[in-house]
Length: 127
Image (cartoon, rainbow, N blue to C red; front, top):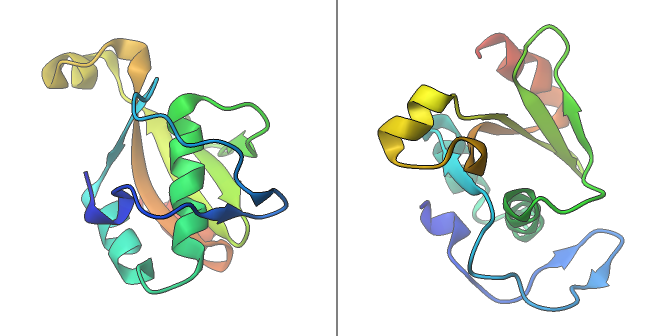
């Protein structure tokens, strides 16, 4: 797990004020970070949005409802999660990838990139 995702002080999410309750330590889904996504998070570690992105990734792991997730047109099976000005690009792991990692098929996603909305099209072209 990237050090940027380690538990830290409670974060604030946009439009929610203070978070209600703590994020559980037992994720329903495992979010794996591809090397480019780890680099993206390292670049963001000094920005105030990092806390919001951590909360969004944890919500994605838990399968929370109300997340702004959409399929990327023409890029099946890729999806994006919108969090403020940031976009988290991810896809479910294939059954072969999940088996190789010892994870149940429907329990893992791969986060490929975390980019500013202005860079989304360029990031999608590299998938």
